[in-house]
Amino acid sequence: MELALAEAALASAHDDVPVGAVVIGPDGAVVGRGHNRREVDADPLGHAELMALSAAAAVLGRWRLDDCTLVVTLEPCVMCAGALVGSRLARVVFGAYDDKAGAVGSMWDLLRDRAALHHPEVVSGVRAEEGTALLRAFFAERR
Image 1 (cartoon, helix red, strand yellow):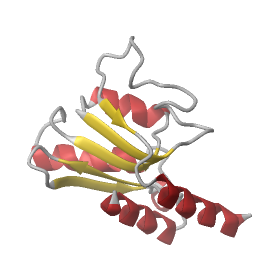
Image 2 (image 1 turned 180 degrees about the vertical axis):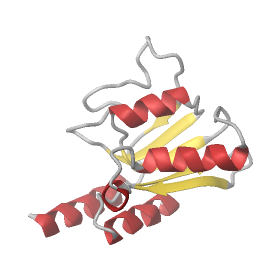
Image 3 (image 1 turned 120 degrees about the horizontal axis):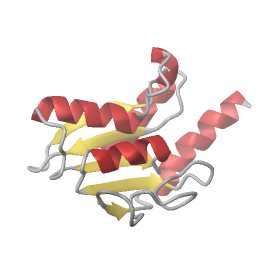
Image 4 (image 1 turned 90 degrees about the vertical axis):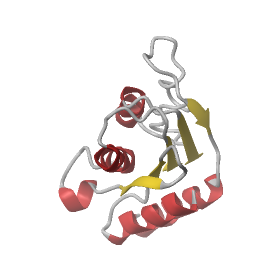
């Protein structure tokens, strides 16, 4: 989570919501990193999870990440949860819950929905206070 929090800090450096993610490969090494880039890239798909998944797929040379873990500072949204299921991740670890758009337990629970094609293990609340503090500071500055 430390590495994901560092990625989140990079997002706020270019005026994006501070969310960061890393993908841990089967040998425990980081194979993908990402942070929100919607603003800097003018890309609605520029979410931290998608950036990290794409980077991991490129490093590993495959789209199936069934032996990998995604660690992200904020509960994934519906779009990202769909990508997590689609990439066949083994595990998803997230920090802060997202009571407005969270799709891994808060508003929806797409990863554990019985209709989903794949069900990664979910670990939640890891260092949630730190991720929440980054988000609160970011939005307090803009209000």
